[in-house]
Length: 207
Ligand SMILES: O=C(O)c1ccccc1NCC(=O)[C@H](O)[C@H](O)COP(=O)(O)O
Image (tube, rainbow, N blue to C red; front, side, top):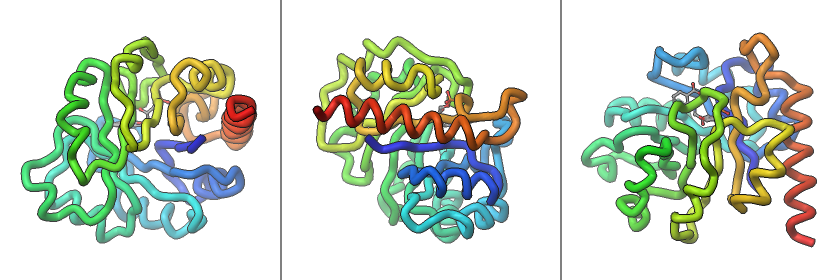
């Protein structure tokens, strides 16, 4: 079970994910509406603090080709795209793409299924980063392929085991559920509890 912690903003938070040996660390870029939005300069500091075993993910909404080039120059391992992929992305992309769907656009899945730039999918709630879950039974309609299927949206240490048992994703993604109670910044104890819950359920599923 892959674990992705999203919305990192500081080198301190990079240490939290390193300590918990998670697989992916996401940073929200070019989206000022998000309380987690950071600049490429801030992202560079987080990247410098991330362990080489944690893959970095630039999280963006309908990016331009220029933004994609800047993300690649900054050194990200993956890009997670909500909304639209730009035309001619194949001309510039050099890193794997995780295509995010926000419930109402789940039907677009078929469009990306055969696209070689897509390495995986993130199935998320209607509003990304809102801490809200969605009807997991919607994922039953999605034909599985060899690409990564990551479940997001309102996950937390208390519900992630149930979500994994219900959806059987390849990975889980969390942001709000591992933040401090005031909603500002990531919380080490919650990241630890989330990672532990994932590993317990994933171990139990394999038995
Ligand atoms: O986190 C954001 O503010 C955000 C804004 C715009 C696009 C994506 C965003 N986050 C993407 C993520 O991968 C989150 O981890 C995912 O939406 C789950 O969030 P949450 O429900 O808070 O756990």
